[in-house]
Structure formats: C-alpha cells, structure tokens
Amino acid sequence: MSENYRWYTIQCKGRESVRAAENLHRQGYEIFHPLVANTEGRHTPLFPYYLFIRLNLIDSNWRPIRSTRGVLKVVRFGPQPTPVPDDFIVTLKEFAFQTEADPVNHYIRLKPSLKSVSPTDKKEYLAVLDKRTGDERVIALLNLIGEINSSKTR
Image (cartoon, rainbow, N blue to C red):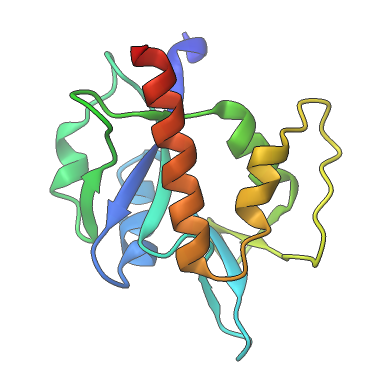
C-alpha cells in the first residue's frame, strides 16, 4: 500500500510554512519541511513558502489540507497535483536531521559543495540545493517539478 504514496509540494501563505507544517503534522500527515540557518543564525525554510507532504492520490484525505492554517495550495501543473520524485526527497533527507525539541521540521546544513552518497545520485537534484538563495532554490524546485509533468504529458 505504501508504494502508492508520493511526495507533493504544498505552497504556504507568506512566512507561514512553519505553522502549516506544524498544523499538518498535528493532523497526522507525513511532512518534510527542511530549514537552513541564515546569516543571522536563524532557521528559515530551504524553500521559502513551500513544504512537502506524503500522500496517496486516491486514498488520502486531501480536503483538510487546503483549509489548514498556513496552507495556500497544493502545487500542480495541470489538473492533478504534481508529485515530487521520491529520489529528490531522499537526496534532501541525506543532508537533514531532526531534533527532539522539534519533531516536525528537518534541519539542513548547506555546504559549499554538496556531494550525494546515494546510489541514486541525481545531479539536477543537487543543483537545486547548490542555489545561493531560497528564491533561487524555489525556482529550481518548480522547474524540476514542471519538467517532470511536461515529460509525462508528451
């Protein structure tokens, strides 16, 4: 049954992705919300205004997601929500860790040059992480998801 579950991207309202992640987690959804330390040492989302949620397109209850505080919408390119490649999330999780004080969010230490240890190493995934700013990472993420959708519709 778990093979039918995929990762999807949630767009959040302005500066509310942490709140959205906490609220979705409280509702029982599996969330992946990577954060990075900024120049002031505060943690900010790796992808500003975005987080990831693991759902089954058919069996999961999608209705509460849109009305969850902090959530704007599920990202879609076309009529259906567009899944994020599992390998991309695996690659992100290679660099992530959680703390006991915060079981919802994942923390990532970005290094000048990221090298994947995974046998499913995808250069385009690491290129998303190598972007300097959160906005650049969001653009790269949406381009990656959009390319997947366009290759499916060809």
